[in-house]
Length: 449
View (cartoon, one colour):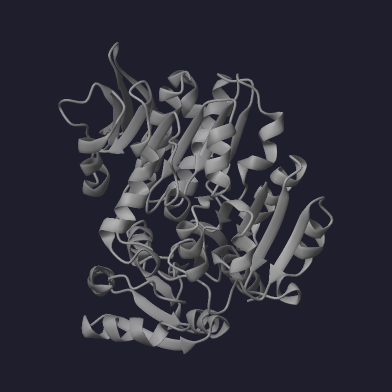
C-alpha cells in the first residue's frame, strides 16, 4: 500500500511517521524545495519507506496510491487533488485517521473562534476531575494526536481541536462534539458561508444516536445546526438556555450553572474566570459542559477555572511599560475575533490591524472602533485596504507599513492608561509563517522597548 501525503508540515509528519511504522510506502509531496522545507525533510527521510517528490505534484504519484493525505492548508480544488478523486484514491488526513483508530472516547471541538481556549480548558477540567486514566489534548491546537495513539488506553479520553480544513474531509465524528460558533472566516479557502458552515457541521454529521452534541444558545450559526444533528442527546451552553434544554451550562447573574435531568447546580462564579472578555465566559461555559458530558464531577470545575490563565497569543498580557499595557492577540485572524478582543477592554486603546485579509467583512469592526474612539494602526499586505474601510466609517487610523514599524508607531501614539492590542484580523502569511510566529515577534519587540 502507498500513502501519498500532500503538503509537508505537522500533519504530514504525523501521517508519515504512523504509516512508516506500519510498513507502508509513504510519498511526501510539496511545492516547496528541500531547502525551503528545512529540517523536516532530513527528519522524515530517515524513516523506513519514506520518499519525497518536491517542487511540484506529478500525477504519476497517484498510480499506486490507495490514500491521499491532504494537509489542512491545501485547497481541495487543486488539479492534483481532483486527479486523485477521478482515480478513486481516498482523500483523508491525520485527524480522520486518528478518529478511526482511537481506542478511547474523543471530544471534538470546532468553531470560528474560541476553539483553542475551549480545548485547553476542557483538558484542564478533565485532568483536574480525575475521571479518566489519562487525558490527551491535541489536534489543530498544534499537536497531532496520532503521535500518541500507541500509548492510549480505553480508559483515557482525547480532547481534539478541529479546524474547518480538517473537517472538510471528515467521515467520522467524535463521541462528543461541539460547534462553538459559525461566523465568517476562511472564505478565501471555502468560497461561501454555506461551504464553510457545511465543513464545520461535519463534526456532528456522522455521529450516532447514542453520542452527544453541544451547541451555543447565544450564537445563531451554532444554534441553527440543532435541526440536523444525528445524536439524541443535545446539550446547550450560553448566557441563558432554551426553555426546551434538558442539559447545559449557563450564566445566572454572577453564577455559572449546570442543568441536568437531576436538577440545577452552581459550579463556579464569574470571579473564578481569569480570562478577559464576554467571549471567554462562553468558552468557559462550553468547556464545563463538555467536561460534564464526559462524566467529570462539576464540584471540581471551579478550582480548574481559577487555575486556567489562558493560552499564549490569545489576549496574552506581554508587559506594562510606562503606564501602557501591551496585549498579544495574534490568534485573531478574522475581524470578528478582533471585535471580541476589542470589546474585552474598557481602557483607551491603540489597535494593531493587518497582514493578509481573508475576504471577510470589516464594516462592523470599523463602526465599533469609531464608537470606542480606538486609534488603529494598520500594517502588512492588507493594511491600506483596512485603513480605507476604517476611514470610510470615520474611525481613527494610521498606516505603518510593515509589522516592526507598526509596533514603533504604537509606542509613539500610546499614552499612560492605554492598552496596545495586537489583534490583527488577518492571517500572518505576508511576513510570518503563522500567527504564533507573529505573536512571538510581537513579544520580542515589546520587551525590547
